[in-house]
Length: 170
Image (cartoon, rainbow, N blue to C red; front, side, top):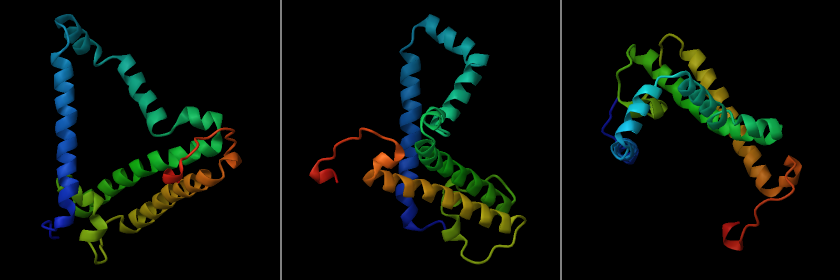
């Protein structure tokens, strides 16, 4: 596999920039806290409330639980986009780990694995991963299809009011 292809450089630069910004903002936030607040953060970081907050983030960020309770079709649309992409990335990473037999490989390879590995790969679980990735891609594309349909016929999703698009935004 040749990792000198230029098309993934923007991906690599964007990922490095993202990590720098997130870590920089966290450090800036933590330095700005008072001494008492820093102690509270250290004590409260590993608590039951932290685990509950992580679970709440997963339920709302990936599964869109509250939207799903209100409107099942909108909930499925949002969940299929967020959770589907998440699963595509995770399953792709596991697939590349099985291919290499190691967890240590360039992180962009799990995203661009099909580009780098064009020949038929024979490794344990290759058939399973092929089907799993196809099903997950279908899951994401079904959400995209619903989002596209909702854009033009939002009343079928039970929405009474939607945003009024300007001519240039249509």
